[in-house]
Amino acid sequence: HHVQTLLGISQQVQAAGRGRSAAEVNALSVRQELQADCFAGLWGHAANQQRQLLDPGDLEEALRAATAIGDDRLQREAGGRVVPDSFTHGTSAQRVAWFRRGFESGELAACDTFAADAL
Image 1 (cartoon, one colour):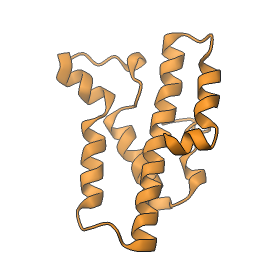
Image 2 (tube, helix red, strand yellow; image 1 turned 180 degrees about the vertical axis):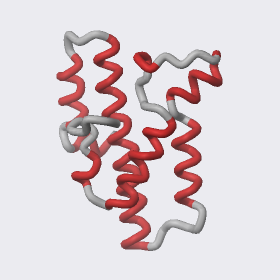
Image 3 (cartoon, rainbow, N blue to C red; image 1 turned 30 degrees about the vertical axis):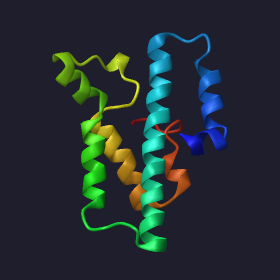
Image 4 (spheres, rainbow, N blue to C red; image 1 turned 90 degrees about the horizontal axis):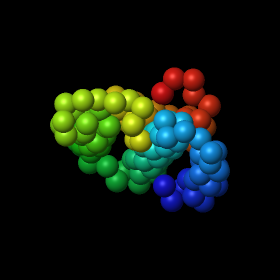
């Protein structure tokens, strides 16, 4: 989220959420969190391309972590009921997809979750 703060994205999301319903604020939060996942993928791309910092298995471990912390999975594990309007970070599949998108593209523009029609 540090990069999002430096780019002014965090402030824009906060302003956009003022006066909105809880479901609308949650939807903005999901877009911000998925963008952060994509930015993490960008870092992985750069670390691998420029400095060969990743070891075999690092990408798979990152994808497993993204899967483990999806809102759908966490809600299912907590009580069995999945309530999409309460999501604040996105589903496991979304988190994996956006991390992968950043990792594979290496392009900041690929991480614009706010312009994406579908997440």
